[in-house]
Length: 156
Image (tube, rainbow, N blue to C red; front, side, top):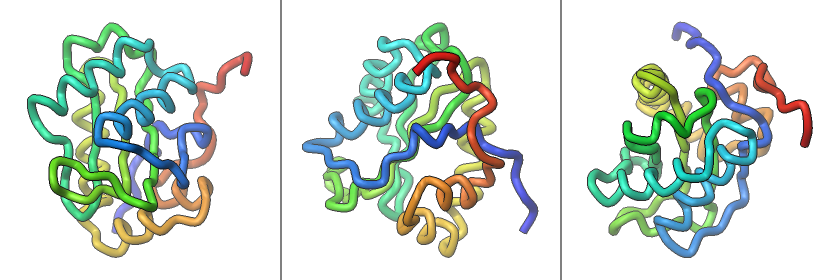
């Protein structure tokens, strides 16, 4: 299996013990993780929920990939992912979701990110390993990331 280019994932945007009351709450948390690492401005989160109301980002196997609309590209500072696991699950319009991978991308960057994520998630063993990852380091390894984002913020 060929290695993919490292995905833009800051370890601070990985949360493996999240809890959400609803699909929209889960999406907000994915967006908040992107906001916390400086990848987006807050208005992007609302467009993540807007997209979900038009077209579900549920991709199967307990995984959803929420992302904003193209109208919100101006609110994205740099391409980034967030990975949130909901061990208790979230009702995603009748489907149980335990793993959400939030995406923020400038330009057409989301196409590459979605393509690379799809390659990972279509491999049942890698998808299962991602859903069962024990820590951020394992998530980074499974997603092919070389480690912390190169876009470290200068202030916390």
